[in-house]
Length: 308
Image (cartoon, rainbow, N blue to C red):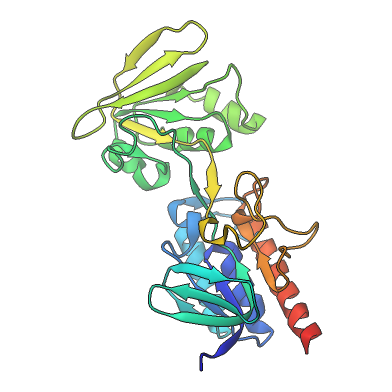
């Protein structure tokens, strides 16, 4: 007979770890299945300067390690494994990995989101060979080199600004004639002498055999094409939620984010809760993810109490 857990958390990161801390402190002995990348997107971030209580900033991986230690300290069971399948059609819920099956009275989902790619020729083929979606992971490799960044939002401005620590020149390709980024991020990028912005410009193809050697671009107003000789290509055009395994099980919005009740982490299935970037296309901040992880744990605790 498989043990029935009180709380099972799918995914780590600020949301999953916070849910684990609260659940464990409520004596619910949570099990957390960490996923392919324990710690989530913050593992790809160097300086986190907007986490409350860290006035000097904190490295993303260090912050995640602290949260993990805190969750473990209160009795969270931690498994570095991938969930391959879920069944929310009956209680207790079933959650499967490649070689294990779990039963749980409640499930908290915090599987996060991943980078979106343009899907142009050369992008997939040259990933890891000059193509990246993470400046903080790979910027070091582009010291004194020329790179392009795709996107017009805060992420693109942040990536571009970070890359100027290493690269000799950063070209931002923006498909419109304005930026979506916040005013402070726009100013930071525009005031940086290493950054050039090409407006109304689409990337068509990444050139190079063994590594990135250039990007073919087109001005979508004039139709003029040109080749930019660059060594690196960074995509910063947004993210998609990791909800593939929940299709047909939970209600998702048109972008794949998990739908939830207003001011709540409750999904359309009673006893299943969603937290972090997997249910939040709007804020997508570490601190808001942690906040929803706390909410999910409290709601799971109340749900379990009401069943008793």
